[in-house]
Image (cartoon, rainbow, N blue to C red; front, side):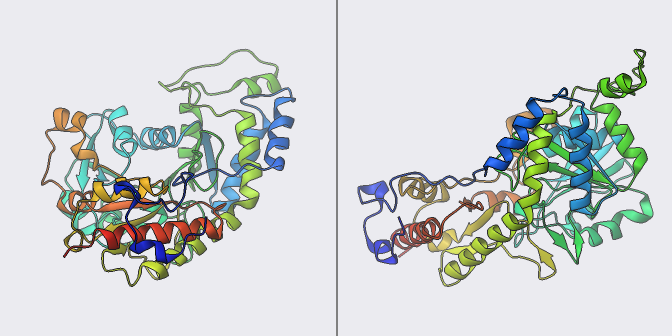
Length: 405
């Protein structure tokens, strides 16, 4: 590994040249150590595999990390978003503004509760939700705004609150990319009324699958805890402690519970999360410096008052300076052993949304333009310096080979 820049002038692997690396470097990867294994093993040997004490321990540790009053753990980031929409009472006839450039779950969660997602455009420089576009989508039916901290950079929640506070419209942060970040000195997890996180293995920390919602509103937290347990007001451990059997289902909920052994893993991982985020930031800084002089590569803008969570490192290709489209660059980098990805096809262009809501090209032009030009480069805390060198070398090699003119 550790390819040098001299390879950049050679024939790309896609057209028969020697690849930068033989083993594919993924865009994301979890870190599991012996402490994690021991924590999970201890939970597996305990009396409680689910709805036990480790769930509450993890929730408290997560709330403390995020400086939030409450944290509610569920079994996925999607469940976290769904629980947030339920807690806010979203229902038929209600509109929730969401960015077009996000994973489908952000909008899907609105539909799960019978609401209608309304797609707003993004800022071309950051790919974060554009407050001006949000303002143009506000109607008398708007019941919430779900902002996405794309790639790990927190949105401008101050600008969004200026649009919504006098209307009483709550803010939801889809912070699934942004754990460990902050904006203006305020931690991700406290920036919106409800803040949803994902703990999937490609994220900065993991519980295998899992999600969390943070809030300072105890009533909303309690409603989400009932929602994750079929709408039943007590769980098995609570009834066991009371020596009781009787329970009531007071609303329609789901089985979105997370297990104790997942929470044991999460509590163990939280202890190292700050160091992992710092390492991600170091790698991203190396990328920023390496690509600053590349005419066809444009890293996304980072706001000066932001501590970026760095779940993803996304670059925008300057296609006018390349002789091929994005997908050819994508294929060329994969052939070099660099596991690039694309985040995301704008949600309003998915067939389901086009068929059900009549959305299509032209609705969010900045998001659509970005989609044609973005690439996600490998970024995870256990990357070695040689891995980072390989990514930089491969990007330079491919970009220069396919330079226009």
